[in-house]
Length: 230
Length: 230
DNA sequence: AATTATATGTGTATTTTTTACACTTGTCAA
DNA sequence: TTGACAAGTGTAAAAAATACACATATAATT
Image 1 (cartoon, protein in one colour):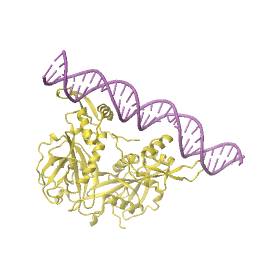
Image 2: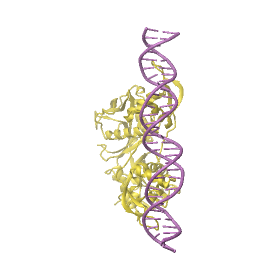
Image 3: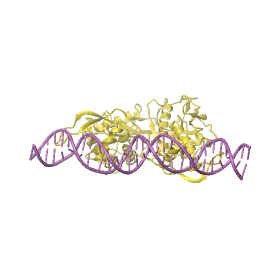
């Protein structure tokens, strides 16, 4: 067998490869986890919905490329994203060999004012994760894995930070966790657990009142935690 | 700003991209965690050590490509590997834009009989992870992240399976965990923990005796576990 | 001003899991 | 038969997770 060197790219076996950066952008509204999908304007998969993403430029790093795509399609520029997996099935793109690097991000949907029309996309919308239409490319697979990653990350990273730019109360946070993990928690134990995870910190503010005792506001720390089990 | 469509690859901004598949292959010998490095024969980084890997073919999936590279350079064909991260710094390769998809794998070093000379590599060797020479490309970064991934994976996957093709005893297993996690465990508690992780199962065999009570042999299950914390 | 409705905030007892720790058993060699 | 050696096992203590009930702050009502 013929060895492929790490730099041996003249060989036609390696020609015409490309790299996608794809982000599953999640939000939670009224206890429903949703993902941002964008409708394609051009072939292939014309008219199909896909995750936010596109081809990586040669002069940008992976995460920068993913953020540029997010900015171009949503106008959002300050979102924290986390890479989780590369997708490289031979036939994942019908045109040429493309490997996609997948990211996840979470954002407050109220901040996406204009879902912009771009050269290649017509419109965009939030879809509840249990009501996803058929997606183009291999984006259904990417979305499924993104969801699993999201479920892991809300426990040991500050991925939810972008969802609460103005701070968050415990009851709000609990609703979001329950939506994403699809599971109910006891109020008192949830609070204890959250504080022990060391992801958020107290502020001395409270929420605006609504006819009952106002909830304390917390905010996400900068620090990203990552825990081992053993 | 000009939008990059997911298929818009004619644009020169995306031309001449390529994909690497790189595997950090670990072993543990006498309580020392080691990684397999290969010496490059050609420019760039001629004479430098690098992790096992190379360019992905257009007709193979990511994991298949990584396994092909492993086979070509070590003769090993039945190793379980796990993808963990893509590396895409703009300047990670001096020749052209390459994105590397990183994998980890573990193998019994005794099974690597001939470290083959290939067209592009001269020789190969196992290096203790605290005595790594300067590596070519961004492989030092990849190796560091690979090690962290290995530490996570030995707890919630059967990544160590390939290290023990003929089964393993508890004391052997404990030495390996202690080497990889760089931490000592109590014998009785380690056993309890291992059994509760549901990664291994009893056989009715025992090891060959060495002047003391023979240890029971266990074997890794097929199943891959993956646990959440909440 | 007092009362009521509502959702927030907090503490404690119970169970489960993790940790710490010591003696018994099986084999080889003398 | 005995001694040396490493493997195997159980139990008590500590820590963490879970189950559970009452007190508190605000707005609205009287």
